[in-house]
Length: 223
Ligand SMILES: NC(=O)c1ccc[n+]([C@@H]2O[C@H](COP(=O)([O-])OP(=O)(O)OC[C@H]3O[C@@H](n4cnc5c(N)ncnc54)[C@H](OP(=O)(O)O)[C@@H]3O)[C@@H](O)[C@H]2O)c1
Image (cartoon, rainbow, N blue to C red):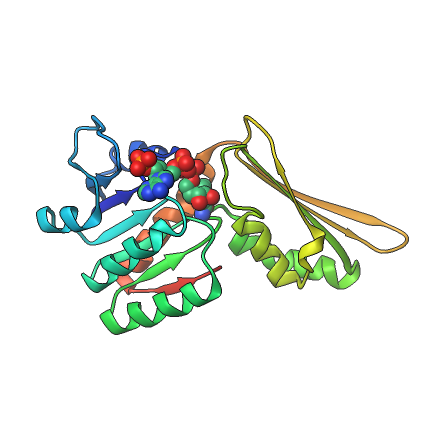
């Protein structure tokens, strides 16, 4: 499986590259960055040049919104499958990307959080909310994170039907990503906390998504 990483110089892109390069199933054949990087693979300043020089199946994107949008569209039109973890996509982006992916018969998975949280926890928290209907959401990220609230907090707010005034954002140096859901009624409180201690937490979800888009052309966009 041949892969290109958009955002390969970033915290997540670099972590993913270091992980995938030792795996036999994947071949990271290039990366996209505005910088010159010595990673032992070709680094292109844009996707167009990359497409002119390389043949690959799937583009993995951990970059920045809205820059990522044009990259994704260009990739889809060129029949490249997509896994994107960049946060900040809007509902209409999801609609447009879904339309393009279907038209070009490529797979695309976009998720604001590739750790266990999306898949395993959804039913549990909906159950808790049914019992304790008042919900506050606190998201904590590194000071470098540009978008606010986080994509994961927006996802939680959507599935739990929480107003945006009840979503709170903290930016703290040295942490990766923490989310706290505070469920209460007048008598009691349950606090549900998810903390990312290491970027390895995202890897299983990303690997699963690579297989889904490449082998099954899965389209699954969570925004
Ligand atoms: N879905 C998940 O599970 C998950 C997990 C972690 C992070 N994220 C999200 O993934 C994204 C990246 O996170 P990160 O921590 O890796 O960020 P980061 O360290 O700031 O890296 C961002 C990358 O985007 C590129 N970039 C930045 N500004 C750009 C611009 N204006 N034009 C083109 N490229 C630009 C940078 O490349 P150059 O400067 O080299 O060009 C860099 O490689 C964020 O949206 C974050 O919220 C999602």
